[in-house]
Length: 73
Image (cartoon, rainbow, N blue to C red; front, side):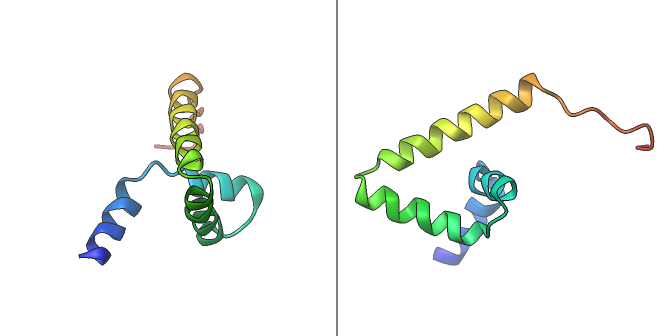
């Protein structure tokens, strides 16, 4: 059950941790553990921050589209 939930969230998640870690050059797993622990210690404030980052990244993707390469077919 938990493995199924983990795979579902990995596929359909917001990708916030993945995009932040790509920019900061650290492991994704470390960022996820940090977000989970900080959510417990701050009583959910970091979860609100996570959702705000997800919303901001989604808006950024909608506003700023990546240019396609001339070599893409």
